[in-house]
Amino acid sequence: MSFVEHATSEFNRLGWLNGEDEMQKQICENVIEILEVLSSQHHSGSTLPYLMGVLEDCVSFKPIAPLTGEDSEWNEIDECITGGKKMWQNKRCSSVLKNEESVWDVNGITFIDKHGIGWTNSDSCVPVQFPYTPKTIKMKDNWITKVKLFFRKKAVKWA
Image 1 (tube, rainbow, N blue to C red):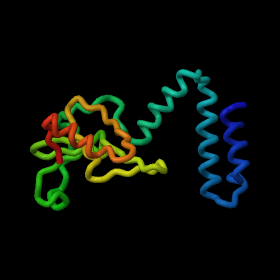
Image 2: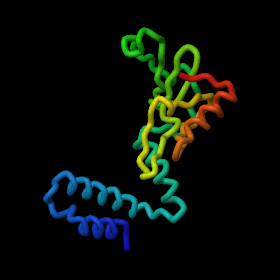
Image 3: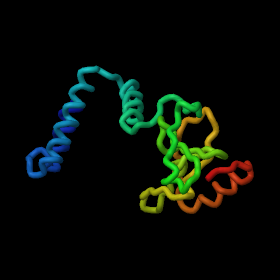
Image 4: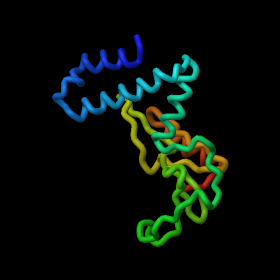
């Protein structure tokens, strides 16, 4: 069974191609179009997962190469937003911020509850050192205390 046949079969099982929900039907048609292109490229079992990883990073606006921290990677954030403090946002990874003292990634930790639902909050910030490849640590249960203790022992300062 091809990608297109599999997707079409699954979409039909859900009634998504019958036109009742025009947006869902359009999404399905978009997916089928993308799968037709993928099928024409004849990827193997090893190249397709690699392609999917790179594609996911690209469509999610994630950097593929490590951030360098060079001045050209930053946009200054308007001081009316930051309460009069100097702050910058990384152009290549919007979750990475810096002020005059430190650099941090606001999406460094995602907390996962017992139902598998994830969220971020002010405790999600992790310090950044360059070169930096953004990654998110997924923490289950109450690991935040352990993470804070780890970074305090390292004497790392962040926002």
